[in-house]
Amino acid sequence: MDDSAQSRHGISTRAVEIVVAATIFLLGAVVVYDSFRLGASWASDGPQAGYFPFYIGVIICSCATMILLHAVVGKHAGPPVFVTWVALKRVMQVLGPAAVYVLGIQVIGIYLAAAAYIAIFMFWLGRYSMVVAAAVGVGVMTIFFLMFEVWFKVPLYKGLLDPLAFLGY
Image (cartoon, rainbow, N blue to C red; front, side):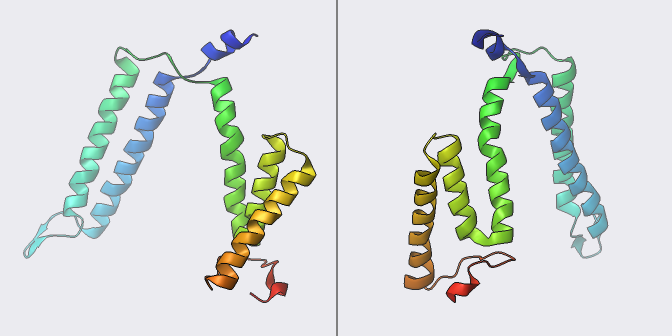
């Protein structure tokens, strides 16, 4: 399949609108449900805690229902393809490692996770050599470590394993 054929295929706008409407409706339903838990009626001393959030949730659910109905039975004036598979692949090439980076911060801390993130991106997407990528990743995060931990005395999160504990910070 050539590039022009791939650029015409992807996730349809209708499918994205349906998923977004369902997600927004679910958010509104959670607001409505939790408003009932807090009390969504009028008490002797005024509105209960969930009174106004209940109506906000109802408005959110109503708007989501209108979006869903428009997506399912309405006419579409927009493009038939919301995102092509090629563009989605490019987005996922950045989003996937970013998600792993966020999880890595929790385990090994921000300094090592960021050094690995920089090095992997330079090697994988930037096509730099592994030595240059590792040197830049470690160098940048060493500068940040010195700046935050030593000079500013602002400790950043070191992770559950705290692999930099031997440095004494």
